[in-house]
Amino acid sequence: MMSKQEKSPATNEAQNQNSDNTLIDLAEDYYQTWLPALSIESSKFLGKRLSITQAEVNLIIRDNEVLRASCINLHQRVLHLEKMCTDLCRKNNQCYHSLIKIKEGHNKFIDETNAKLKRAGF
Image 1 (tube, rainbow, N blue to C red):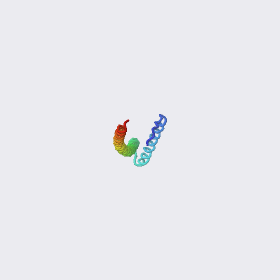
Image 2 (cartoon, rainbow, N blue to C red):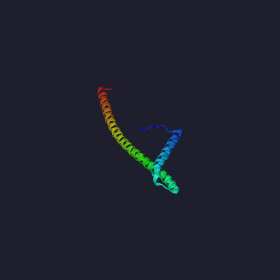
Image 3 (tube, rainbow, N blue to C red):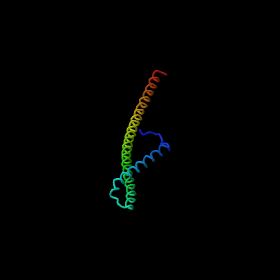
Image 4 (spheres, rainbow, N blue to C red):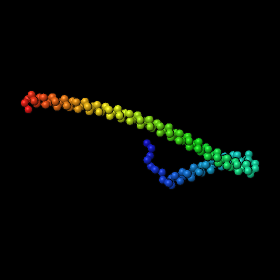
């Protein structure tokens, strides 16, 4: 089961900083790879912008894959819960029918006992 703990603002801030650091590191890696091919200052600036964009795209793709996996997991849990609900309803139905049988048997017993008591004069 999933934890019901809520993330604190400090935890969220730390995750955002970690994500920003990852983005910066990834963008810097791309830029360093492309730097030998960037000969003039304007191409270096555009290369820096492009490396940031490429890093953002890669992180979005990664996050999308994580979300897709989470959705698949959630879908499996929903299917499992639906099956559990179906089983619970079936068992509830069985219990209801068992109670009806018990009630019928109980009523029959009371009727037979009352008839015996009447015959005995009570």
